[in-house]
Length: 193
Image (cartoon, rainbow, N blue to C red; front, side, top):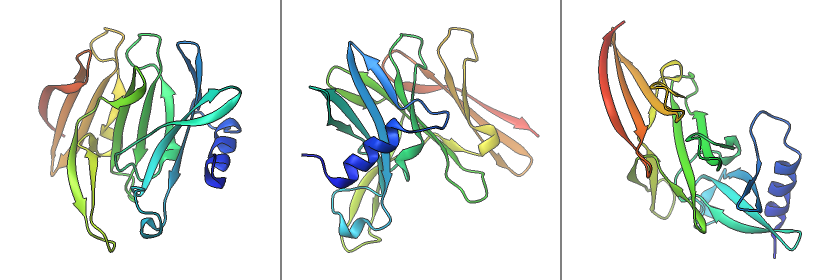
């Protein structure tokens, strides 16, 4: 049974007019992507601030298929995109977290049999802002907005993730490469800027 919020999320995904792809076909099945942002997680235990939801169409009806476990602030900015050129869309969450526009973060989830699996590195954190303590995964792929992006750098038709941030007049840049299973650190650079 769908809740009112799930019905609204599905309606929003189907009527989305922005650039993000919200519907995809994988192995003949249709998946709808949407997200949520919680303003007060204390009233909804189990929800982690915000998240990504994927519904699968079964018998012409959307059924909740998967929900992200990581802290993603607002799931509405996620979209489907084939980033490794295998013909199957991944979920890409690429979002400017900071009010100054200097903190961009990236999560990527790959379809794996019966779920989406996180393929970008995270660290586990614990928050006790509310009456209960919540553990969640947070991406380590975050940096200055103008220095953090996805791009095929080496010409292999698979997008790398570049994470950059400034420390004084030095730009620290880390590049992560997809190894077929997950993104791993490929190279690090310090550039005078």
